[in-house]
Length: 189
Image (tube, rainbow, N blue to C red):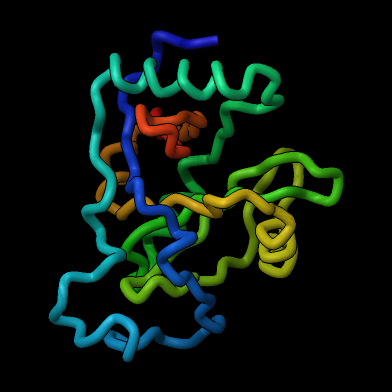
């Protein structure tokens, strides 16, 4: 069911993190500012704070309808994340954004797991994320992410996207398909 309370929708890159080699940074380590894959830090990084921009309501509703048409029996088209979790993730000084990873728990239920990402595309491990009524640790998050088998594995939003949602207590993530049929996640407060 479409809700008229969507006050801000944000589009993320069509280029999914499937093509963008996201790796894990060991806990407590500092990511390098350059690497052989990304070149010197002075080049335009693939992962940066400005990725993700608002889209108009009509486009968002059309994309949500596209998803519903292709997936009429999808059990969950919306996911919710406590804004405090996102604020904690982006407060890390090396974090340039959050990758929203599709994942499946042991029972096969779909979840969205937010993980901080540095400018080199490396994951920034977190201690625990609240999913439903429980908190899952880093190893469980990685296992659930591995359980997901879709072509698009995650979507990246720069930290500036979340600064637009700072007033929210909960961030709504709505599954959508753009006009070319590419999976998208729309964020709203």
